[in-house]
Image 1 (cartoon, rainbow, N blue to C red):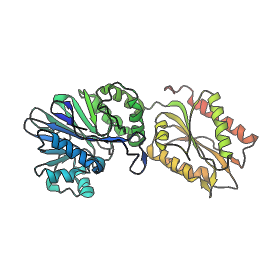
Image 2: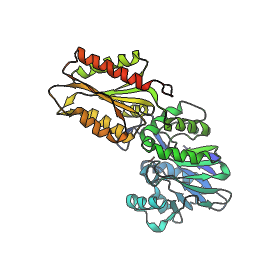
Image 3: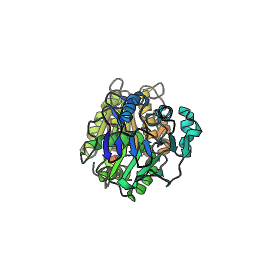
Image 4: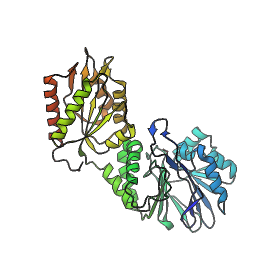
Length: 395
Ligand code: FEO
């Protein structure tokens, strides 16, 4: 794919990765991704905005070679993660005059991870402006979207923002722009859930900062470019708000069917009470879909059998994920069956303990659930429905 012009003098020179299916050996990529690098050309100087994953170096190089002014004075490094910074050593080798611009913390990180020598790096301050001639780069320090060193760049002359990971999406598409296509929000929401949700307070703060800028184009480092900034801003303000929906994320694993009987019963009991249920069989589910469901849900219920004195390993993984992703979920409960004992509830509670969730009465059946267990599930469903009454966000 050839460089594509966003504005006069600003080109997309990144790479679309149609076939990648896993990120960080953890995050499923059902729709691929892209590594968006941009070339900004002023009348005096030029800047490369981030690079690409090293596996796509050949694409970045070909795109740069095809530009009429391939000199690079600056390489803006918004983020030290290698899917953006990984080709910086190759760029510095190819363009001996180029200097990397980044935050102080990022300078240390690219030295640690990529052996970029200090002499080729210049720290930029929050709010500092670098003039390229007719175009200027204003740096906005924005820690924790996604790592502690992250920053963004604003080009006032073009009302264009480069936010790197922030406001991006893992989506390989032939469309340069998201436009008003709301289906792109599905990928953006999944990306928010997997990457940004743990940092919700910081995300809100950075959103407020960006709202003060006059922005026509948001060019992130993954996924399509937002030419309708209001669409992604409004979505992020919704996802990061404190409002939760009348939804239960019911994730479960069942070995011999007892826990599944309880999950099926609780599902019906909740639906009968007007509560939306999003179910995830942990042995088969896409973990990204689970993360996305956590963005809005008021309650999470984990169904698990007891294995070797504790929750099933897949349930441990799900509970760990909830604890790590830090959703705004308010209530949680554990249900499941056991054979002869165990400390399942205590172990799950420890994994989500610092989220400030209200833990509802667990329901644990010895072997197959009996009438008393189903009655307890009814009480749990009723408690959830009551907790959810008057929630301010539609499911
Ligand atoms: Fe796209 Fe945090 O790297």
